[in-house]
Length: 256
Image (cartoon, rainbow, N blue to C red; front, side):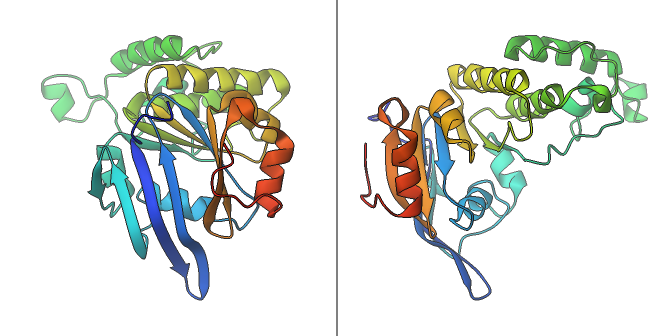
């Protein structure tokens, strides 16, 4: 995997918010069919980097490369058009809608013909496709007909992950996808992440849970003070090494 060209890469990105320099020449790489974790202490620049790579923000300088060519995202719509989706920590699900409706939120299917032109939704088709996609990703739900607010935290998170994955053909960013979940629920979300990786999608995992990072990631990239300070192969890395890189005890560019 290390010899595979990156699908999405940041090269020397800088980003200022007023007088605050959030990114100071940050670099990052994600490859198809891998889980790469992006870790760092609070203020390391993780959020700013992800916002630049997902089209939420535009970097002040540096280059974003997608599939071997420089790109410029002016909005999340630009990134989504290239198959890049994001699962945010706050889930952004509609609790009063059922899982199928959440899966197609903003991408609703309309009935064919006149009814569709009149705005009538094809709820049966959305439910059928949602059931198929949830089964494909191993998302286990008691029903696709109950409001998502009635589901457990792990089930709601799995739906949020599935929604991004279904529409992400190339890259999916996951911001703390297991935060506030119990052990069993957390494991189910991690299983979904592995299934996504196995389908050839690049998964970027942002997490503060170091044991979890090492359990699910193939590689880890560490940010500190707006720069990448270390890269690791997860299988050959310890929590202590990650913490050392995050705090500055380990400073080499590539500790793999």
